[in-house]
Image (cartoon, rainbow, N blue to C red):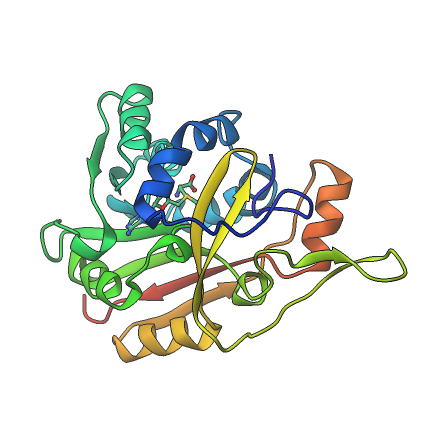
Length: 255
Ligand SMILES: C[S@@+](CC[C@H](N)C(=O)[O-])C[C@H]1O[C@@H](n2cnc3c(N)ncnc32)[C@H](O)[C@@H]1O
C-alpha cells in the first residue's frame, strides 16, 4: 500500500486526540499496511538505498528510533548488525517482539531516549522524524547515544511534500492532477488519514532540520532523493512527479 497518503484518502482530523493516542489507535491498520514487507515507498523506493548505506560499513550496533514493528531492525540484523528498536506505540513493539523474539525492542520516545551514552555506531530514523513532536530534544538524545564518529542515517518525507499535506494531490479546473504546496516556511502539525490510519505528521521546512543538525555539530556525509524502482507503474509515476523522500547521513565528530 501507499505512503504517504494519496488523493482521495486523506483529510484533516478535527478531533481532540493526541499524537500518541493516534498512533495507538492506528496500530492495527498500520500493521496491515506494512504486513507484506512494507508499502510502496518502502519496498520500491527506500529499502534498497537505505540498506546500501548500512551494508558492509562495519556498523556493529544500531539504534532504530521509531522502529514501528521492527522491519528495518530485522533487515539490519540480516547484515550482522545488533539492533535496539525503540517506539512509543505498544502494539507495534509487541508485534516486533513476536516477529523477532530474540530482538531488543523497547517502548520509548526519541525525546526521552534512555540508551547508554556513546554506545551505538549507528542511529537510524526511517520515516519517523516527521512523527516526532520535539525534534530538538530528540536530536540531542540521539547524538548522546551515538559513539564519537558514529552515524545518523535518516529517511524522511521531504519538506516539499509535507508542505502539501493534507491534500497536496488534487485536480485542477481542467481535471489534471497536480500537487500543491503552500505555507512552506510555517512549521505545523497536520492530521493525515488513510485506510484506517489517522496520525499527526510534522511539517518543518528543510532548513529547520539542516540548521538543527549543523548547529548540533553533525557533518553531512550523504544526501539523496531516491527514485522509485519497479512496482506499480502508476505509483512509480507519482513518486517521480513530486518530491517524496530524501536520505541523509550525518556523522558525529570524534572517533
Ligand atoms: C511512519 S512510522 C515508521 C515506522 C518504521 N520506522 C517503519 O519504517 O516501518 C513512524 C513511527 O514513529 C513512531 N513515533 C511516534 N512518535 C514518536 C516519538 N516521539 N519518538 C519515537 N518514535 C515515535 C510511531 O509510533 C511509528 O511507529
